[in-house]
Length: 474
Image (cartoon, rainbow, N blue to C red; front, side, top):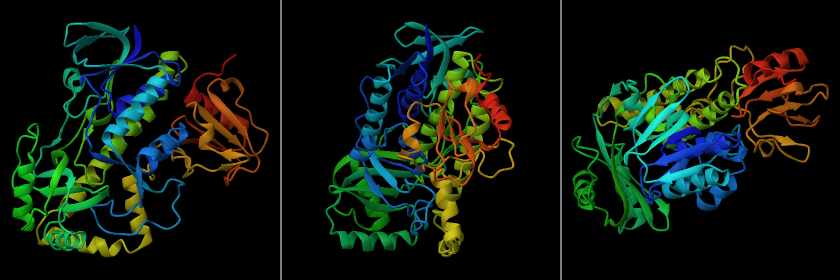
């Protein structure tokens, strides 16, 4: 019997498997597709996700396959420079092909000892007090202590679990693809700029190597399960822009709507949800991939703690309590972005006003940090503003903080030289560094990089150790 079965080996599922394996949890990942995804589709990793990859020593692998670009135009496509003096060493966007993201994360999980089986579709399950029995499409039955549905927007796990998925159905639809463009670059830019005056959702953006991302609204909503044809793109481009821009050699074609839904619960008994199985929204702002990866980072260490028996009461419940409000915020900001990108005098007027407001660095920074998840703060009931927020990477004596977080454990950074991890040293690493570039005496970080405590007294530290890491070992 496995400790955890994960349905779906997309970014959320693969990242969750890797996080569990850092804690020696026996993990089996079941992916219904017989082969890894081979789509050319380019996706964006934002600052917070890049920080998480750095925490696990993965970022260099992603940088080798990706392309950096500045953090600009991330909110509703409104042009604005990157904020000054960002609070992160990873303040950029990294564009990668979807197949490279999937490949790198799956390989990371495999390297850590996860089992991944392709061509295995979960079609049913039953849970009891001891575990979950999972049925596959070919009739095979498997058993695990927990099941996590990372199986996408049409999640079988969520449906069978009976969890509601309320929200709004798609009201608009957009074609999105990647292809080459025959028209001269300056002519493309001029035409796109003119079209966007009336239709901000329209865009043609170069990705390099001759490939362009093409986004063009459709006239109505169709069945998303039916992929668009290249002729659909050519015809709709001519209708909207008066030219098809000489597009040719398509790499990837898709369509998306603005359906926005959030699972009523992220867990029922021994079955949990993460990624698109828990939330869907339009891709404006490029947040979906990042939201799912960050779900996995939050959940992994908590589920491992439950399995190994050291989780304090209610720790696993904090997964939903922390991540569902974050998803609510993402859904709301994508709703706002879609409205700002709608044709019509009203949306154009509001978009124009917001464009002028974004000339103020405070406004621009607020929106950028909202999209890139840098501003996320979990409510730990503490008065200190930094508690509950992410721990930025920082210089240490002889290295960087994130380089000391590869094992996925808690971390105590002590500048006083007086504190100890004590009976939690099997779950929390101690760095005694009087010259660390932080402006507090000591800070305790959870395995997901969020600050759990700031102070200088051992008693206060021990209380928070117990809160997040359970009882001290004898």
